[in-house]
Image (tube, rainbow, N blue to C red; front, side, top):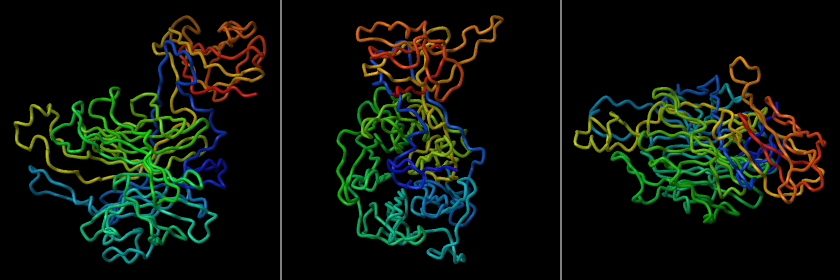
Length: 525
């Protein structure tokens, strides 16, 4: 079974590493991006919703140390050394509160977060290894890895390197003040740990605070001489921001930083993902998880919505890892009803994983919201009421989560479509490039004919014609020379009456889209 974790630009399973950012290059066509085209007419972008795993929830809390929640702020991947799937995720103790429910309150769970390890042979059925590192009450063995007297644990980024025989496992881990103690150096920061087996971890001499400032971050080892961090920082509230009265965090935004040694970091000044005029007015940015693909990077981005106190997930694409484009601002993984896992918040793990043609995202799915909202009246009308209507003071509720996963077809996260649908044909013209002697393949799905008495009425199709330097269709390669392409094909070769190889004068392609989803195209010669 071919399995690849988010890895460096290595394409084979035997060399795949966690904590890096590459997928198999042969499993999909290059990124489909707006800058592929000089003309986009009557076209729009479609994003595909993720498929929830039929085995969800994969892990629910049942032990005294994890029955309050399993699965947030961590790393899930297939370990190239042990051959096991491993989940280094935060777990919390259960928390009940039956007193003074009419008053704002703040959960203690944030001060009791422990890093725990779960293992699996197939990524679906998980067990708790019995380790002696951190006992809990009468339990002499647990799957807890870090003690609370050295601070809480969050945002584990695991980096593996099989060539490092002394310490093939490394981990950047956020340690924050707990009810029992402080981080190793007294400050909230990312501390670098190392391990020989992934079970017993030793603290190294690296701690990182700037530019992440002890906030949410995932860290990757993209190349031998470069670490990359995608991190979240809350900014100053601006006049255009819309925040309800029960929200104290403004302008959560995602930044990027790089480092050669993992110690000294430099912020990438060209990247900041923050709410803009295309977002709903309360949208904030939380997490970005990348994977390399031909032509650049794909990423799943966690979005926070203060009005509803929920989190969902979008998809983004980038040529360079700094400048990101959203095909659509709608979620690819939305929220379930409240009370179901994922009804409140979705917290991604560090890694996206490609397996058998599908892209998997593991996440901690919460049953409840970030804060209590007791009424859905407009906040401006409820301020006059007492605080039994809307909780305006609690920092956050318990994160009652379970480990879940969702998946997509790896080469079909988003598509170019006709913006009007129906019989309206959209048109796209590529930018000039050398096409002579190359063959064109497309990744597409067409809509079936309408349910009417006329066979084939309004059936979807794609046609392509090749253009010369004067933008004129080339004889033998015009639209009429291209039989309509129909069906469901990940790699379909385009043929014209003039042949399948582009003539020497061809420099552009013009696509005609009617009730079709175009997920990708590629000229190869």
